[in-house]
Image (cartoon, rainbow, N blue to C red):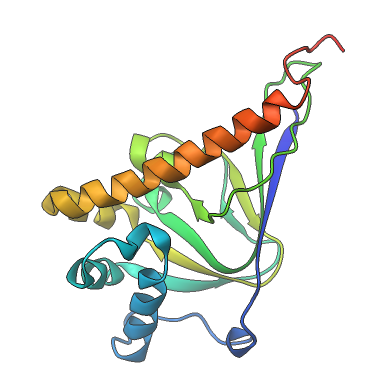
Length: 191
């Protein structure tokens, strides 16, 4: 089996280094920080302020150490494994098991300008399709997937805005992959 690796890198703000994870149970400053981070993410910018505030209620910012896995490939989708993860600061490696065909090649995929993970499992309710590992101290916005699904059902207009945003991210990934594959001889496994 071969690994397909993609690397992302977000710089850690010096003011956030060494701080403890933000706990959403402390509703004052922590909630405000979560709301501000959520509001700065392209995927959520088109939502009204009230919708972002509602979504911030089921988010938390977690501190992830180097080498720690955010997502494990093929993990079944229970409520916890449907969470969406957005890297705010730090760096990750993304890899996926490719075909176990003995002549399969490793594709070197380059990331697009997004650090959203878990969206495929969240949308399709399928096992995780890749493995995500932090390579340096990272801050990650964790959105509880089951609660976001419920919110989208109860707020169809906001749900449509989010689904369009996720569709754009997925379309960019497919376009990026297609461009990379058109520049490589990945289809001829005999070489």
